[in-house]
Length: 268
Image (cartoon, rainbow, N blue to C red; front, side):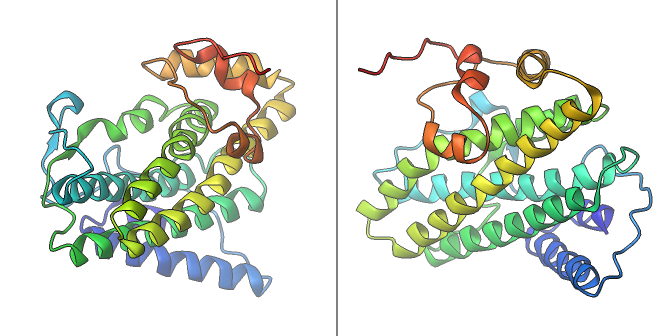
């Protein structure tokens, strides 16, 4: 089921399949007859539509969000992030099925994959309401790099994808919500508020299963997190951090501030 999602190129078709498979998984769980986990051979690169054109981060045009074109570009970037997140969450299911986990691990990542599919569709609807669509603009080509780099390391994947990349979403989403609120785009505000609320859970799943593996293997989680992020993440973390939401997701400040490109400001 996870590989089905990864091998589906069209964004709307991919997300429909993700939601269908998630419903099947949870129906079986509710019936007390969970599906067999099995094994799979996921592709190193998930199938993607012909558009958007994927560019190096430095070549993606920057647009000011104060204009309608800028707001469309911002929504397009969010849609691209959400589509990558769909693949990342189904990939963590398929790629690491050889690692012994309780069924709750699969519950969490199937739920996250389902929610990311919903997020992609919400943002795509907002784009279409503004006369655009996903694929109309170029996008960031580096989004899948973390998955490639951590393809052989489940702890590295948990550290870098949910606990760094998705945690970054908690930092920046409130500012995006304010941009669309000021523009009077209520549908975009509502979509981003849903994303913001549910992304806390996705970050929390990463922290939960990272700590689970550390506990099972007798590893101190904080220095191990620092080691893995320095190894796999190719830049320093950038403040400001949403310390409240990160704490809600199970990531305390002493996990991320030592990896930041500046020191924290002392609170009076």
